[in-house]
Image 1 (cartoon, rainbow, N blue to C red):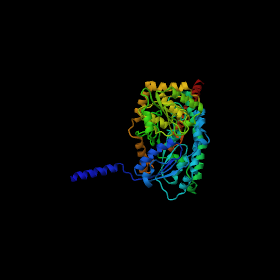
Image 2: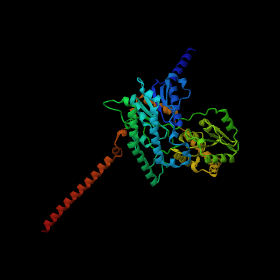
Image 3: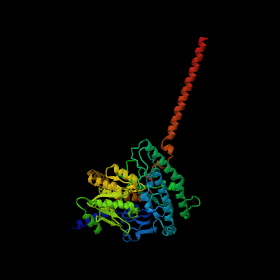
Image 4: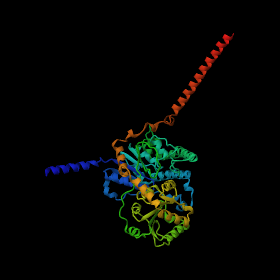
Length: 531
């Protein structure tokens, strides 16, 4: 019996050491006020805390059940969060098509990035935190979403930097890891192009990308630098000054990116660019009783349809004429139950097959077997959840990457798209029926779900591995290619091409000159012989 106890003790020690990590001190910066962005950070944050790390988070939203982590977790809350509607009234999103223009979307994103960056710095809690002395962190985890000034925390604490990009790969991320984006088949993230672009699409792609690069380099990044200089002024070294944002971007060790082949086309990447799409998706939990009862009671002849336009857009701000279109369609489809995220206490005159809820556990609802269709704005997180659970989608894109997401999944045969600004009863009714009754949409959704789930590792474990890898290897500088600091003309071998062209030209000139001399000498000899 003694040897059994010894063996069990040994096994326990071994198992305990598998997940053991010396806890590191980490500063997590998630200042963009999009709730869906925070959900990604929240899952990673929770796993890091469970593995023994000590974390300070600058965030707009409190972590659920944070007290169970004791003093290993500290929040610096931006309270209240940035008000999106102060300059962009909610109803305008329903009435305009301007948000589908890539140049307009890009300008809005960069403006929003500057506004939310300064707002976060001006938060009293953030200001107090930045004045604290004696703090030290081994790693800074920051969202790279048009708020680059916060990378300066890496310099402040002499810490390694890992970034999280919820948008997917971009030209500026490629460049920070030593890669020039191949624009011939990699479309800009705000276009609706595929990797098979015709001549004019490739031309548009190049023009938009060059505009993006120039605007970032000469307008946006200098303004982010100015914000960093202003709010990190106490860190200025009289001899060296603060590093530039561009330099800090080049020093990022690893970027964790919301990329998967089911939602983006194939594209090259460098080591250190890690795919973590689906990191926010977890096993389904029990639904609240009222939602579960409503979905369970859906007619067997139809099923349930789930409607949610995301954490930012409010269905309750829908113009009256658009609202009446939706309500009329619900009345014409009594064979379906409609579960709708509705943010107001004031409810319209509803048919009996509609349930409004201010908050809905989306992942758990999409996992319910009665859900036949997800009516969504096309945000990448919700779309990925829908794909994971094999639910077809009807897209109502408003802004950002939503138009491109809708097109990609429509091409995969798992959904259709409507334009909210001029939607009609006939169009909405027809497309709902088309998706639900045509089995090919469900078959394609099942196919994409299988692809999305078929990964070598869980995205959350992949994320945590690379974060801890950077900590273990003190920045993991060996991951960075020499191409990061290589001039573009050397990267593209233009210096060799120029040297080769000059060598060929000189060779041709010398050969021509030599032949000319020989010919002249021959002519002289021939003339002498004739004389």
